[in-house]
Image 1 (tube, helix red, strand yellow):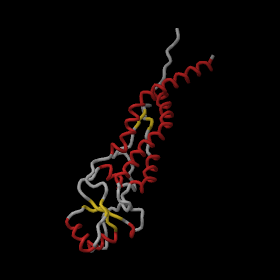
Image 2: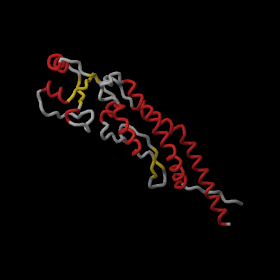
Image 3: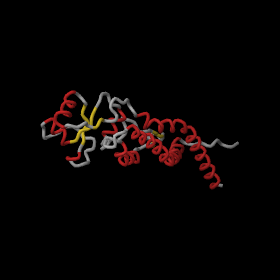
Image 4: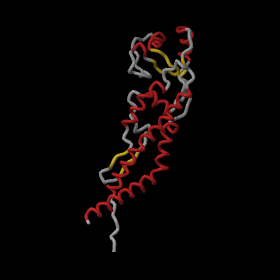
Length: 208
């Protein structure tokens, strides 16, 4: 009587890890499609918070994201990015966009902010802190003070933050990747089991 072929959790995990690495590019592509759609909401070409300006950084962070890892018990941990586990270093504006913004905000340059506040030091976090000081732009709530200074001091209309009063967009960007994994995980597991069985069968043949 033939003995049943036993496939360990470790073998399945290793096979699944290999199969999943081939799918990672597809998953990143799905996320970037959602990410690129954010720029469709930006109508002002002068906006410094347009996600297209941070596309390369976003793609770099996704390529460095650990989508899959083998646990100590031999199991496999598969995760997709979300607001808690994703590295938003130098992407704070994207984090805010994905979190959602309540209220109206404007984009204001370092120079203009000094003009209306009379302060030479700005403690706020800029939209992009990698650019020189004189090119930095900040988000400020569009309150009565800003409206008055906009008219009396700057004599110009400030650029409106295009994602003002917009709810969370996390699902729009990260959601499709999560759905893709849920729709395909059973197929990947079954494929990993089949691969494991074939490897064991081949090893038996080599013993004979």
